Length: 219
Image (tube, rainbow, N blue to C red):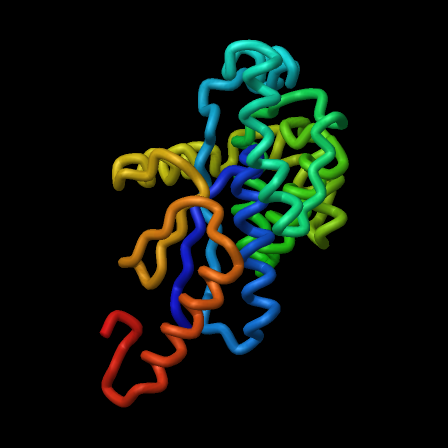
């Protein structure tokens, strides 16, 4: 297997679109060599713990409603191509995602990391649920198969919060300044939401190299 490290934030719509493109390529190539691990990155590390009103956030970031609408046009176009449902009108708050990343980490310990990432993306971008809210996160944890009560107790404390911040800082120190960022086999870096065709080509190339005697994936 070849390690595919994915650095992302569930509050990033391009990360959601990128995952959908990757999922399509993996489904088309069930014999793919990737072993996937998700890593935390907060787009808004200084976001208040309770998040903030979504409209206020977008207008402040993009210079008013017109700017916010303009910046979302290419996103909506790519979401359609990727088969992703974005219900932007349902989103009331932009969250602080530290606790969501803790949830992804805990899910990984139980072998449910990717299902948790998928559930969080759907919860926020499709259903408009507040993924910065501890009670909501505990509900999602239960839906994915984690112990809801235990998750609720963990979220009340600071378990693994420093670890998540340290991993985020480590990615930034390595030069990651935008997400999604993909690292193949600890060496090759791919940035941005790449189309399924790009991933299909990568998979084809890696499989071909692995099937060549004495040739590794970087040969």
